[in-house]
Length: 280
Length: 246
Image (cartoon, rainbow over all chains, first blue to last red; front, side):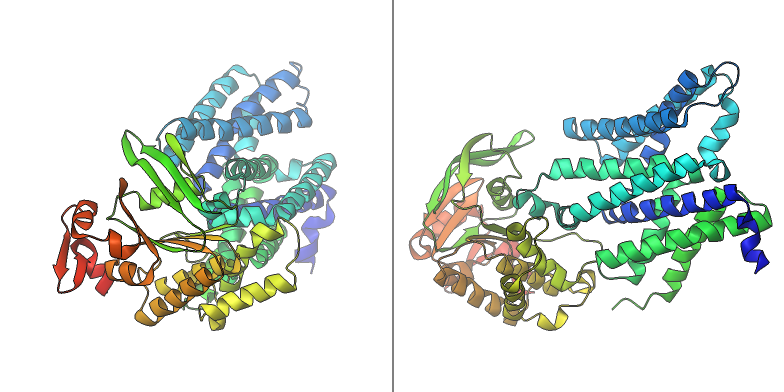
């Protein structure tokens, strides 16, 4: 049993595992829409698009004497940059006949390049770039955990309130429009939910792997369920279990925590693939 | 309550998908919308439900209780909805975002599943159905919606003979309830036999009226641009003959 409990003796490990579970649940639920609507590239684009926002927040709030940057500013910067990425992509799609994946990719590389340029001008950020890309689950503070939990509750409430419109938008956008639903605005709400999941996810598993939390648990759940509420529940369970399991692996085998968590989530997908009853 | 198109023009890019389309359909009729691929049938439906913006003119369905069944619904086979869920979506318009399914909603869904003979498929995942079964589920969704105007885009494509007959019975019962049904179809024989009115469309209205008066050889030749041949008493759209037979 010590094998299981040992790592969680330290408070910062418990906080990190809880934060990973909370972020996992949020991503796992929002991620159901990402895979149902084929928005994986868009989600990845959002994940990388937050970099310039994070870099600017860092530059503005980290003192030259080496004080820590403001956590709130970094979350705000990430969220603004993420929403700008989504808005810019949507604007390109509205005004031209560019394919969605092309538009998302162009905005994504622009934001990433902008972020890299800004980082190169900010002293001290080179070190922190590692935690941006790979996450820093053990550095999550109690305040951040509370913030993530509150945001997760808020996002789940939005998902519950908009259950029918978002299901219809995912299943049959034409029908949603024929029923008079504000299809365009609902799509933006969906992008905003993904942006929120990304913003609190990159802190835990890093910008490179945040897509893993958005895609792997829902992809596994999709194989095992036949109704959306069940898919969301199974997806959330997989994500919530992947967090402590990943942290255990990371502790005992001395592996990167974010990577371990995502590896466990992806393993769940592989298991689901094998277990899946043969398609009828 | 009639459907009125008045000088409807829709541009897709630089071409006119529909040019100056006008007609008036009194309520409670079954109307066949005939025309070759690319004639603008789907565009007409999209304009009717507000998905395509007219460059000029207008189309008014006379009711906001409208059901639209697309020709094909591209849905990932793993999409997590059951057949009962899909038919239940027909009730969303009346229920709004929150209201729970009531007695009447459940009955409408059950009746629709019954009418399209898919009650035994209710708990199956929609994505696991065959093409014809999916089509029936979408038609059941339209039936459950209790709409006054039904727009069906090529609903007979991919249906077997018994299902076609079942759908014709359904069209008949919709009409006797006073509902207006507009059906895009390639099937000239059925259009002349099973419908009250026909619209011959090839970007513009070539002919409109009761089938016996409207479906002249000249109108059909202009509608289908010479691809129609007479086989005995039957007029056949050669471009789609294979679909019809298969």
